[in-house]
Image (cartoon, rainbow, N blue to C red):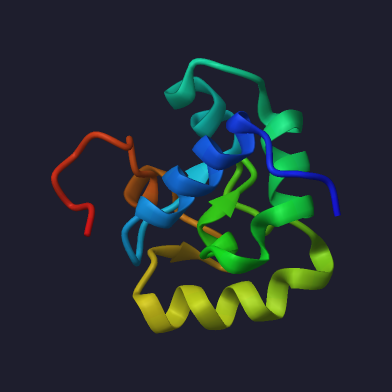
Length: 104
């Protein structure tokens, strides 16, 4: 596996801080960090994201990171009480800005 980059460390640290029941889109993470973009965040998550709550990182439309992860995402989302619209996250209700006081 590739060595962890400083950007990857920042992404993973932020993902660990997303509260249960909340999510961030790939682009939200890049914007919050002021670095990279959705694809770079996706690369970090696909390479090193298995040890963090990866289901809290979604596409901007609230869909799961990958179709083959949908069942596992739905299970985690329901367990955490994440607001849903069908089989996707309700981004209006569940999006976390990284700044509000609901972080653990």
